[in-house]
Image (cartoon, rainbow, N blue to C red; front, side, top):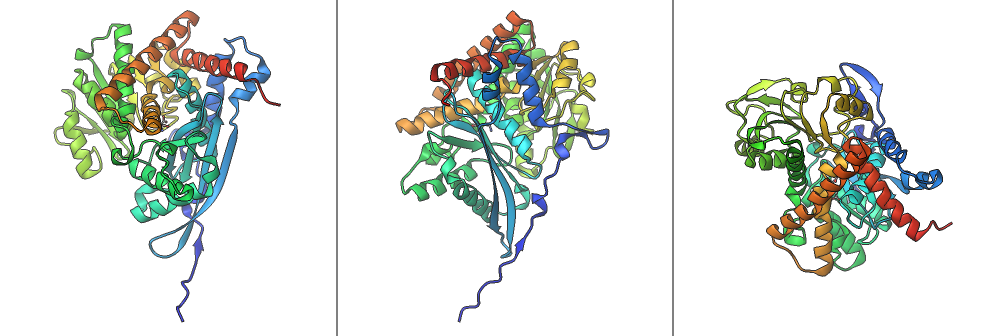
Length: 444
Ligand code: GLU
């Protein structure tokens, strides 16, 4: 008789909901910051300037549906571990819910609801026919094997299969996930449907229906917005300096493309440390170094500096491209850049925004600045639906055609209302969602 395998279910350390990132700083204090509260404040500040029925505002502000599941995953040592996972659909007013899936130890429902909400406003700012959604799993992908990540991803899809579909909810990569995870996502969905369904997820590998230019799209969008902001402020990029916090996909591509326009990067950081070179860091070399060593530290020719020094560097352009709540009321006064381009989602808190405004920092808000990623996700979805694929030049050209008018629209609303770009972007996005809600009516 076959010996049955012993099944032990361990409660994962990682399922403990941690709040590290919702604290201002482990060193300086313990002010809890709810990321979802931050979005609410941003929304309210913009909504106040629009003449909209308060009861309808509540409807478009709150997440439509939040799902929590606990996923058992077989680990390589034969044990089972539980992972808590979320999918939030904030809005489907303008189209299917759209937004990435995050794999990170600090994921919380509060954070995923905030990120889903930002997706609604982001898609409306660049005027693509999607609502907003976001998913997350509390796990540390760096500590998991490929097999464990595959089983986790497949179980995530299986346990929430009814939520997903090309016209329902279309996930994509986010922090800790990438094309391979999207490939497993698509395969699991397709196996359950017994047909190929490439448009159920974006950010797939190009060989299986992904779009050319998708991997670089978020960074390319950051470059486009920064370039347009520099034009508006009459800042010459050829003599401009910059710092970037985070050197993952978004940070590294933004830096590479701005470097190609002549910008000199003096400070770069990642989760392991920060480096500095007054003469400018060789970004292409740094990308290769990071691919080889998995970190930017120890890059030859650069001085090691404190990680915080990157945010406070005296540069023309600062790109926070890591996580939320990096610039708060505690440290915003130390920020010395001219343009702050939000590569990450939510790096600046509403309280910090007020300080930056006083100090005349030109903030390009996340829902505009990093919208290049979801814009090319939209192109991928369109290409999957028509079954015909565009060249990289065509994708990049169409991205310019979406991002430049979005930047101009946001700037126009902000100038007309004498507000920061963030409020202008929210005003534009809320108006666009409201127009559709008015046309559709509220079914009750
Ligand atoms: N995760 C990315 C974002 O925050 C991309 C989302 C998507 O392509 O759907 O915008």
